[in-house]
Image (cartoon, rainbow, N blue to C red; front, side):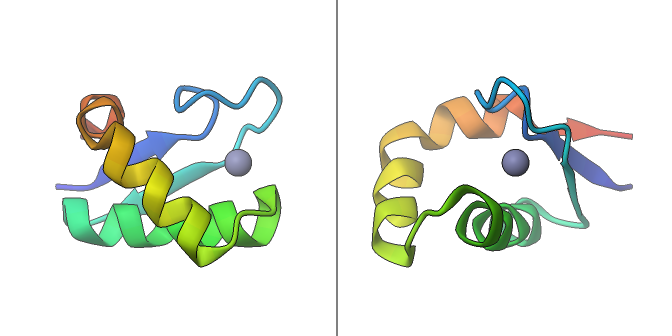
Length: 64
Ligand SMILES: [Zn+2]
């Protein structure tokens, strides 16, 4: 089973990047890398964002 998370679903109006992972932990790790590299987050800002919105992000993860 592969999990996927679309950046657009997560709230970015223009980014079409999709993150993949085998586990929720892995996909959140990939999302973090993407957020830092592409969206200019630093590690602390990202961790704060995730901890505030973790349930929201979890609901956006699709499995296929
Ligand atoms: Zn993105």
